[in-house]
Image (tube, rainbow, N blue to C red):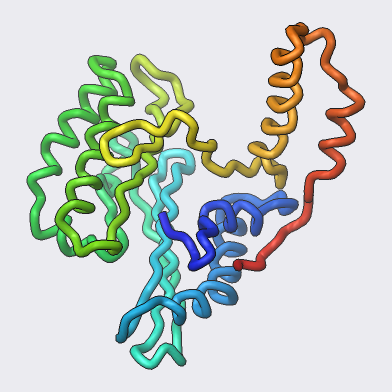
Length: 253
């Protein structure tokens, strides 16, 4: 998904950008876009090798009957001294709700040409998604298939250009067997990462993952002492919650 030279994941950084900001969808995208414009180019300039470099952000969203895609692209010139940021928004109507059907597959990143030139993976993927929507197979089967597609490109690309790890996220349709909600799975190669941390999540400006981690740490301490949830120290939890940062942090290291 992208990391800096100091191995800081951009997904975690974007969550910090939105922390403390109780924003709706498009203002949130705007805040991330502005932070990318200020912070990302200097990291791109440090990438090894000659020539122009770029970073691509794709943000898919569902709003009512609309399927939206927001993209933010940062492009550096070959001399690494000039850059420009492009921002686009595309809107389609979800199937069954209008005449304009949303785009089914959106690609971004350096391997996009390879995906487009060899589309053998498309039909099996769409068949599997359709089967999952109908309740005939679990979402994990679709996630495993997508991870295998990514891993195949890792094996065929030059060393270091495409990593072996992937994260697959999904959202259920609001009709059929599953009623909204979703989930995600992480993979290294074809194996699931069982100890992978959850994806960053911001709700009403609050870092949901940080809140959950505080609570879970105290629950684990209870289990180690063979105590039940009734013995949890609410005062210690409140103190730990007060120490959590609650303001935006746009600095990307």
